[in-house]
Image (tube, rainbow, N blue to C red; front, side, top):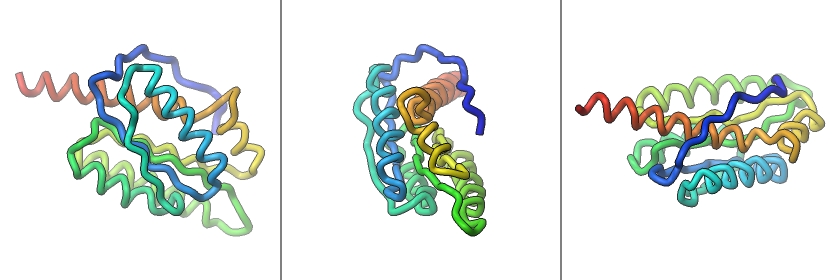
Length: 159
């Protein structure tokens, strides 16, 4: 994973509804990502997001699907952190969750941000969930941008 960041778009989040589903596995690092995501949404004027927790990253797609189908949210952020161990399990979780989250977004027409970070070492995890670079903020900015994109095109389609 690159340590680069996308350019920032200034978006007024006041008219959007967000949910964040965060895994409890690797909880302290996930909590940092969650905290930074909530801060970024708040800074954009968005109402406080609905926050739900799952045991781990593997359970995120089911929770995201449940909330996406509720029709209550403009965008949903799935946040998890999977650190490689002695087996290939981290890649299985990362790949299967990414596919599931993409499918949920396409099927429900709700923007879903894949905030499941897959890393090889705890040091890499700490780099991405720290204060200098925190992917949680980037996940929130992506959710804002995709909510705006969806609103633009759904409004255009309904005219």
